[in-house]
Amino acid sequence: MLLELAVGDAYGAGFEYAAPEFVKQFNVGVRYQQHPKWINLRPGSYTDDTQMSLALAEHLINGRKWDELSLANSFVEAFSRDPREGYAQGFYSVLTQCQKGSDLLRLLAGHGDSDKSGGAMRAGVVGLYHNVDEVLEKSRIQASITHHSVDGIAAAQASSLMVHYLVHSLGAKEDLGEYICSYVPGNWNLPFEGKVGSNGWMSVRAAITAVVQENTLLDILKRSVAFTGDTDTVAAIALGAASCSNEVEKNIPLTLLDGLENGTYGKDFLTKLDKQLLSYSTIQKENISIEAGEDRSAQQTLSLSMNTRKNQASS
Ligand SMILES: [Mg+2]
Image 1 (cartoon, rainbow, N blue to C red):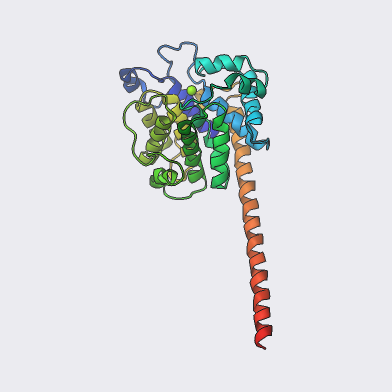
Image 2: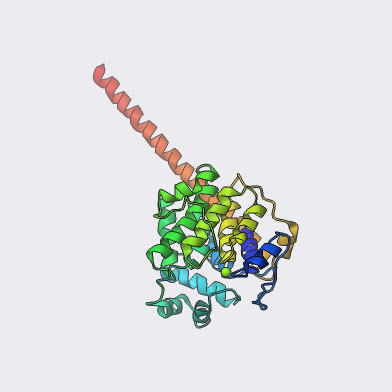
């Protein structure tokens, strides 16, 4: 999941807010593109979308406390050990001043009410939890740190539910938008058209559209970028979620898999985290089945004893 998300992020980063003609010419899904303006961002490098997602993945795997301070610690830790391009300028500058999570919360106090896509771009990982109420609540908390607005939180919850619905096979891919509408206010079931601006709902709705209307990871990737605008965020959300669907063909070209950065926190690191996420999700699922089994056997014992009482009463 993180690997595909990072491919989407790195591929989309070459096209972020680039001219439509540039996108049309180079969005062929074969190689990472050098961004026409941001020369420091090297092709195949991922950005904030992936770094903050892997921060949440580590947070989840390590069973850290799910509150704003602990989550802020995880965000700061991921950035401090590997500062990189791609963050919004203001947030980048804030992160460079932080040594721990409490610094981040202090510096963001009074400013964390954005309705942009930051809470949503990293929220897919949260969808791995098995209980939908837990997904919604945990997504709200992680988004609130930087995007404490009704729309910012709704976009994050919708993004988490994309993964939740697909990874737990809760229904057909085409009904993804309807499912999200049943939990989060918004027109998540309506296809998105046009350029994706900076609002969180735009990125998430465009990502839902790409996942619902295309059936392979490569087509979803190209479709995400073809919207133009905030292409790395759309592609990161869409590919992370689509990688969890058994209706989607996993056909990311080798040129993109091999071309993804592979330093300390690159491809191999993400692949390892993906394996840990998978086993975390499987263990959680098994625990839930065991609990359900215990419930069932408790119910059987109860109905057995009720029948015995009934028999005793009638005899
Ligand atoms: Mg980005």
